[in-house]
Amino acid sequence: LDWTAMKQCSCVGIRSCALCSDPSLREAFGLHPIRSELPHCAACYDLIDASVDGGCQLRAEDGQIISGTDLPVAFEGLELFEEVLPGGEEMERQILETLQSWPWQPSQSGRWKQDFGPKANFKKQQVKLPDTWQGFPSWSHELLQAMQEKTTTLETFDAVECLSLWYDAERGASHALHVDDLWLWGERILGISLQSPSVFTFFEPTNEICVRVTLPRRSAYLINGRVRVDWQHGILAEDISGPRVAITYRELTPEIATSEVGRMALDRARLVALPPEMSEKCSEGDATAGGYRTA
Image (cartoon, rainbow, N blue to C red):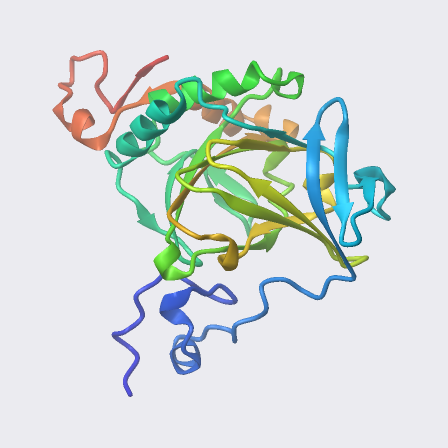
């Protein structure tokens, strides 16, 4: 069987989805064999509460309640917020509708993406600003401001990336366990879950400990501190029960934020991006020419 014209996804390396699960197809395209999403866990906990004041409270498999700081590698720095959209269901509907004004680009592991932010060459650790990126959508600025009013942890948060990920359940979408790059992205990562609930899985590899975190629809999480650096996080395919859109905001490291390209990126992130169709209609002399306007 000739597989050369049959690969229909963007997975590479160890990434996989429902469209590239056939071992023969993976071999034909140089993909690695599919690995188990979650390594062996010596202990597994469910998160029952997470806040800046009370820390993280976990429930063990035997029902015992412990603090996240009681684990060999502390599970601390995670905050959860429910019903974070100021406009509730109607705002969610408007955001999901507005997202369709921008094209979805194929991503890996059954996901699609819209990336408003700088581009990075992670191997060379270089950052550049694409001409097509001219700020965040208006709803993104509104949502970020609302989140900054909910916790003091975000008081100095200067977002430089707004990434929308659409998890396609029909493609077996997932997000492999990982730690976001530490040379580029700063200490805090903010995420909002739309359209359907899911579960965040955190894994600490040294002691093989897993923490499962329920993410209700229209909820938000904030990753900071040790849970940002010492714990991997991801979304298992089994935890995607329907279409899910995740909005993620990231900040730069202080070193990159104070560089020339970092300052330019932060200035651009403060602009309000226009959908491509509206951008094309803007005349050269219009204040919105170039696909953006000032916030």
